[in-house]
Length: 312
Picture 1 (cartoon, rainbow, N blue to C red):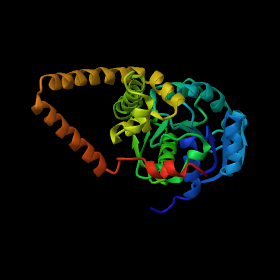
Picture 2 (picture 1 turned 90 degrees about the horizontal axis):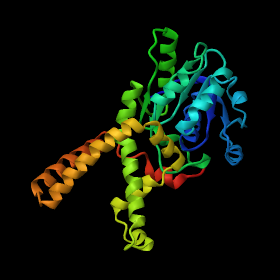
Picture 3 (picture 1 turned 90 degrees about the vertical axis):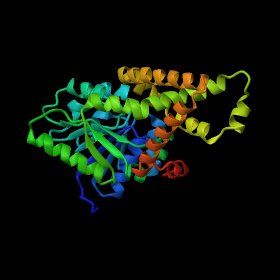
Picture 4 (picture 1 turned 45 degrees about the vertical axis):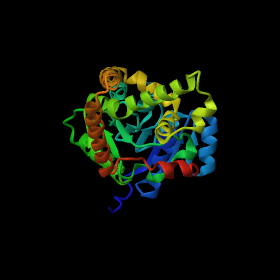
């Protein structure tokens, strides 16, 4: 796929962690932006971004960072977005586009709509990609290749808004991502199933294993099979980010958790009563789902590449 050329002469990324840093690296590698500005509340992160040389400008001043930007990407934990939106949107120039990369969308849409959007184009977004790493060093340009990015644009008859959505879609596609447009509430329900609940289960299982009085910590580490190792990888994700996700998407997560609890109870009954047919049928169905995920190329987010790099 040929590069579309520079789509946004000036890009500002607020929060330079795994996703923010990967957006910058991918945008530079594929030539879709000109200058890059990073705004980050952490002095240590700002210093590291400057050392890495991935942005022309690094600042802690939000308003200054966004005033000339053609595209602003908020890449911070989702509970911080309402406060940032109140700072960012009034400072943006007319005709600029604002998006985010948060894993919940209804709360982001509400935060954006609470501001005056008459002069800018606000388009919430979510690239479904990541590793358990965090910080400015963790980003890499290939993170989004073959992954899905979901945009949840607002309902609008404005042709200029539609053009802004198409342009932002082209931005993500330039990275090798697939783009889907979706209603924000439907997004949050889908992600509760495929991402949020699995993370909650991983955090719970790892915590339960650590709390078992008859198993020492060394034994948990020493005898970990691949299944438990997978859970520990997921449970190593950024705790602040996931705290915010569960608070922001509590209704959908609780709905899915209730369904999961019912299914778990059904499996418990099958095990208790030795119902081998039920167990075999369930495991056969779930294996088919796994094979479908692998066939669709969605089995991993470049975990080895992302974990092994961690620098630059």
